[in-house]
Amino acid sequence: MIAGLAGFLVVGVATSGRTAVELLAGMTIDIMLVDLGLPDVGGLELIHHVRKTHPRVRILVCSGLSNPESIAMSFQAGAYTYVQKSGRVEDLLAALQGVADGRTILSAAVASALRKYVTSARFPKSLSAVDLAIFRRLADRVAPKDVAVEKGLSLSAVYKARSRIFQHCGLTSMHDIHGAAAKLGLVAPLSFAELN
Image (cartoon, rainbow, N blue to C red):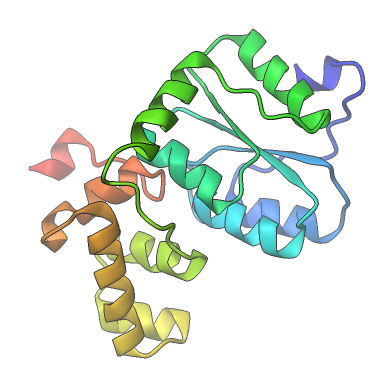
């Protein structure tokens, strides 16, 4: 659909965050369309990476997640705009054209969710890319000491990140960490069988 739009040229398609990072290493782009629910590197982590390595790229998030937290954190990570997959095709096209023109266009649903979140007492400081990577691994039930080894961090740094994650998401135990991570698109939601 995008390839058929006047003024747009699709230069690459990636089905995972890692593939997107690899593609970006060898090309110059203006706009990147990102889903939050990617199978390996989460969309929020990818946005952080792109903002650091390709600061001129404008990121449009198109996600099935519609909760205020995922929308707000997308903007905090560096997204230019946010479109819901459940929205109208016209909303996506308008958002794409807006991003190309340097404007942020939001649907009424996204604007309302964002407004509610920003005006709530829950509005937190964004988590860093490292915090998000740790969040994803903890949600996958990887032990903190193993996360520390994987990420080349001290165990203390992992525990401090876990404390920030708990504070950010209002968690009180590890029991709810997977649900909180799924809400942000860091991991896939658990199936009914996995919940039991």
